[in-house]
Structures are given as structure tokens and as C-alpha cells.
Length: 143
Image 1 (cartoon, rainbow, N blue to C red):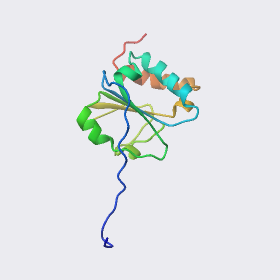
Image 2 (image 1 turned 135 degrees about the vertical axis):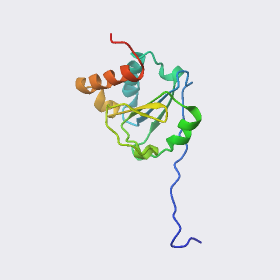
Image 3 (image 1 turned 120 degrees about the vertical axis):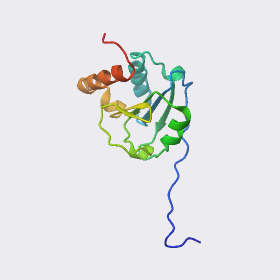
């Protein structure tokens, strides 16, 4: 039996990661319909910084209301970059201010938060902002 002083917290389910993680890039995006076009857009964007989603990333698709504990994973796997599309830091167990399209260096890892892929793809200005910061965190020379 629980007393009135007990605190109960929901523990997030572990994230089901896919990909081989060759370049130690972590990618998380919110589940959207249709998802195939969004994934294709994400793959093109990553290929522009010489990253293959399947071979060089661990990636996961989360529901908008899903939570995840990212810090234990980051401590264990030590990714170089974490890209998050359509989610804020809090549901991922991160407690820093989020500025969309502004890289944050935390725990020896670059974090970059952006809008949902479906919102990002048709917007030239948002894509340009994202591209400039991707070049920075992946050390890609101006082309």
C-alpha cells in the first residue's frame, strides 16, 4: 500500500533503436503521417553532411506524447550529434532550454532541435537555418 507521502513516477519505455551507429549520430523524429516521404527527406538531408541513416546513425521514431530517458543512453553510447525533429528536450529527459535550429553542446554531444519533418521540408527558410547549423556540427565546409 502506498502512503500519501510516496511519489510515483512513470518510467518511460526503452527506445527501440535502429541503424548501425557507425558515425555515432543519434536521430529522433516524431511520428507523422505519411512517414515515408518524411524519412526520404531526412535521408537526403543527412546525405548532404555525408551521413547515412541506416549505416551511421541510431534512430527512432517516437509518438508526439511519448517520453524517453535519453541521458542513460548518451552516457553509454556517447553520440557525437543528436538530431531531434518535432520533439522538445523535456519529454526526452533533458533539462535545458531549447532553441529551434540552434546547436547546443552538452555532455560532449551536439544537440540540434528542429520542427517536425513535414513542416520543415516545404519551408526554404527553415531548411536554410537547419543546413547552416548541420554544416557547423558536422564540420562540413561551405559548398
